[in-house]
Length: 251
Image (cartoon, rainbow, N blue to C red; front, side, top):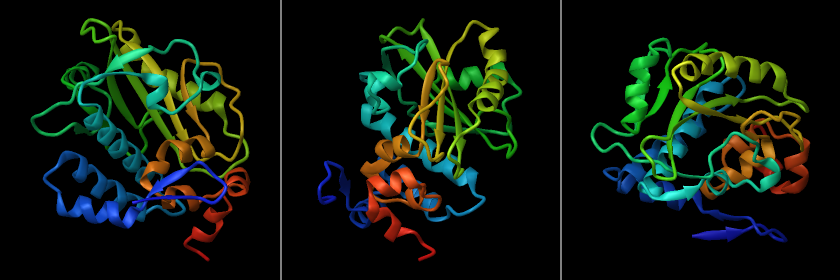
């Protein structure tokens, strides 16, 4: 079920086989998230940033189920080397899986900080359904070194864009604003930004993980070639993997 690009170490699961397995095993939490992930990816086009958000939170939910509450290195989870891992981020963490009711919890917005913290501490990934939520699309809980007293929350932002340079100053300003009510309650936080921005480097030095188009491809390539990888294909990713140019839906 694996195929490799010629001259590359990148190996892909064959997505039709994966989707077929997921549809046949939809009682499995992993299969359920795979089915929904591929459905949202199939709708990705021009102005559909909320669909990218759904692809990513279903992917993160899937990865949490795979980890099954075991301790893991956060930098390995995000497929990053040390040059892309910034300060203020925990090293080894655990990600307990909420059993009853599913791992994803949807709220109207992030206004009720206390209620959201209850959901996070129960092991939920909390998603705002408000289309214009400022700074953050969803929140992900972690416990440092398997210690229930040392609680972290990842604030995730998704930017479905096609630009050479992302405005990191503005992205971080909005993220900081959304994090403030949690920081004021003593919660440890870090940032995760998934963006299709077409660039090699990131200028930000704030604590967290920042993905450009190439980073996002490396993080999600286990799923096969997605519309996420092709609908706003930039020159850097296209040069590294020319096969992606042939996968664009408009051709």
